[in-house]
Image (cartoon, rainbow, N blue to C red; front, top):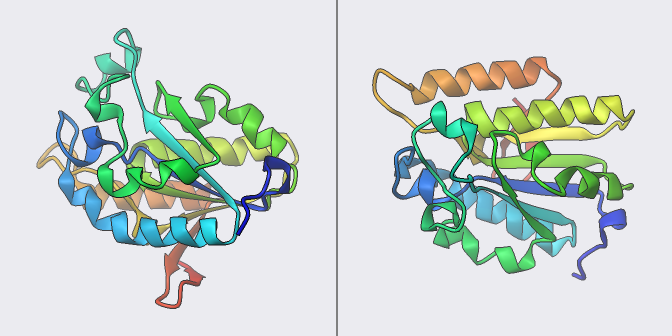
Length: 204
């Protein structure tokens, strides 16, 4: 199907931080995150088939990023870590746009906010990728507040089977962090869904 123009898009899928530096190798990498790849691929293909919006956002830090004082060095711009994993990189040519962010919130990536405002027919945003408790949650809640501020009644969905976070024993427990993030997102108006086999979704 022919891809819609920005002003025609009614549904937008945002792929967040499926970087090599989070899913393959690096100071914050956890290859276990890649278990969500098959579900993400299916969602991307569904959105593309219907001609709706598909956007890629990658972590790509400057060398002077203040965030690197709080987290170990990761995903520096123009490095292998800042690139999308090979399993999903094949879809980048079909994305409406790709954004690079220097913070944990995609909303503030250059040009992303103006792009959202061009999508005047938008009814739903779906957010997939990693990490659940950091960049997924920060984007989802910030986006909810942005839409509210602009009086835009747009649904934000996070599929539970298509987001994940990393695990570091005694430092960052995956199960605990996922639960905390899901609680915070739901309490802030984000719709959590779980995919059924036929590709439809139920509220969690």
